[in-house]
Each structure stands twice: as structure tokens, then as C-alpha cells.
Amino acid sequence: MSDVLSISRRQCLALGAGASIVCLAGRAEAVEPIDVVVELFSSQGCNSCPPGDRLLAELRDKPGVLALTFHVDYWDYLGWKDTLAGPDFSQRQYDYAKARGDMDVYTPQMIVNGSKQMVGSQRSEVFAVLDQSREKTWPVPVSINDRGRELVIDVGAGQGEATLWVMPILDHVSVKIEKGEMAGREVSYTNVVRKLVPAAMWKGAPASVSLPKDGLLTHDATGCVALLQSGKVGPVLGVSAWGRLTS
Image (cartoon, rainbow, N blue to C red; front, side):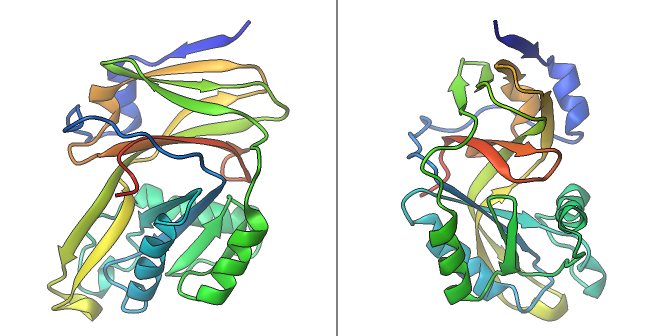
């Protein structure tokens, strides 16, 4: 029998303080099967980041690739406060570094399937790692289902313990940067994570998590991703996406 986990509107708001609104404009689009997850840690205050941002946009269009951007806030002191950044995204990058044991934290940094990291602008290395990392089948099935006012995330059976992360996504945004190292430039960003919600701990049994849209989705969200990772930020065990992420 599956475990059913339901989170109220108030509880969901507590997980992501400051979230506003509630519904996506237009009809949700189907998302093709995902066989590799790429996370880019970037910043509007980093003048070496645009090549990584462009490469992520290119990866987004590759079949089976889920490309996500996390904006960190630790470069804000250089004179420009990143309009898409948050401390949770910086913490995620630090948690990855701690889990790997190398403490390598920089921008632009890419992480593939929660385990392999590289400079996010090095095309040859990025493509080589992608080719090596594609999963024919994820260890644990994950799906997102639209139930009107709720999103229901179903997680299948497996082994071990993992965190189910749920992330509202803004598929595309261009930002004109007025100060700092990038002053005067306008940069486009792809599949930007707007909030990180640790929705549940999974311990091997099938489970269903119900999340109210009005507490989960940010005002600018065009889609949502559910990511099951071993431990806290370990290897990806399963993934699903809903809404508009790829166009």
C-alpha cells in the first residue's frame, strides 16, 4: 500500500516563504521523457557566466535533457543584487560541494545527475559527461499529475532514503543588468528555478505527495520539476517535469 502525504496550503507556504500566486497562464504542455538532469549555478554578478548560460540554453533543446538554472547570491556584494538569486540556491551548491568532499564552489558550475561537476562553459567536457550520464531508466519512477488546484507527485518503490525536491520553474527571462561586472548587458536565462521545496523524505515505499498550487507556484512560474535525490543532494534517483520548460 502506498503512503499518502498531503501538505496544506499553510504548510506549503511555510516551506517557501514569500511565494505569491497560483496558476499558470495557458495550458500545460507535455514534457518529453527525461534521461539526464543538468544544473547550472550562475549569477548576474559574474562576468564569466554568460557562456555557461548560453550553453545551458543550447542543452535545453537537446532530446531528453532537463536543463535547470540556479542563481546564487554570493556575488551580490560586487555591486549588483541578482534579481533571480536566493540563499537556498547558494546553499544547494555548498551542499553539493560538501557531499562530494571537494568544496569546489564557483560560477558557472554545472552538475549532472546530482553527482558530476564541471565548469559550465567548457563545451567538450560538458557534452562528454552528458553522453556518459544518460539514464535509460531511473532507479525510482516519479511523476507529476495536475489535479486542478493541486499537483500530485507519485514516487514509486525502491531502496534507500532520499529527498523529494519540488521546484517551480520560469522557462525564460531576460534581465538588463545595471551595475557590477556585467553593467550595461542584457542576459537571457533558461529554466530558472524560482523556489526549492523539500516536499518529503522518501524511504523506499511508494508514496504520493499532494501540493496546493497556490502555495507552491511563484507568480512567474511556467512549470514545475520534481527531483528525487539520494540523501539530501546526492545522485538523482528519479525526475519528472510539468508545464512549460523547454520553449
